Length: 88
Image (cartoon, rainbow, N blue to C red; front, top):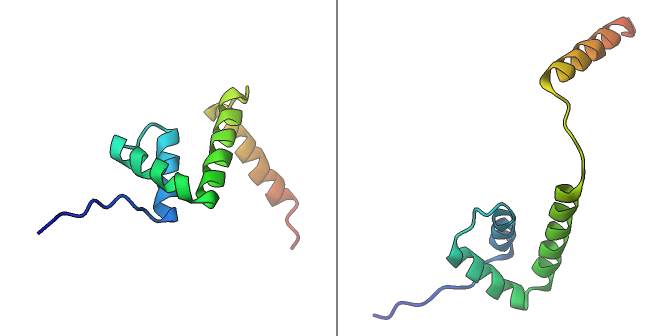
């Protein structure tokens, strides 16, 4: 009985591995399978290209997050404004 080497993966799995690779969570074997899949799948190549571009833009951006105290303050002001403007 011979073992068949299964290196073909469906597009959904290829996209999942692409996402994992962006965060350095994919294994070596997953990366190999992804690269083989990308050789013959144009749609997944485009997905990977766009995913890399998006990740690069987010990484290079200088966006800062609001701290927890300010978030809570904003939330309470928003809820108060909703209550005050509630049409009965």
